Length: 80
Image (cartoon, rainbow, N blue to C red; front, side):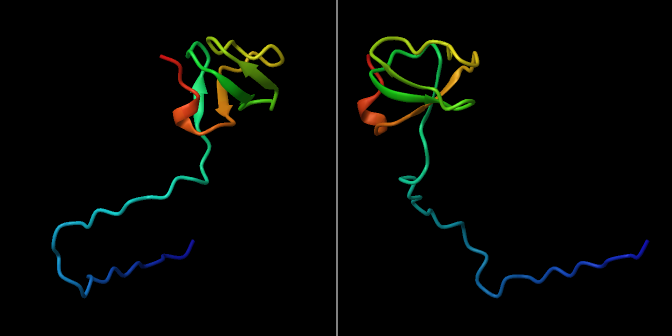
């Protein structure tokens, strides 16, 4: 087995505090657990089964999955 060396170089920029960066999460899916009160369209994260729900999310009837992917923006799915 050959030995491999790693060389780490110090940054040439100042060592000030980290800069806050706002992330764009529009391309990411929102996931919701079974038992959460919701209203909207959801897909099971395990098998893709689709459901329209206006109450607590059930366990998936096809695969018994408990994680659902929201098909709508976050503000429109959680019911108080």
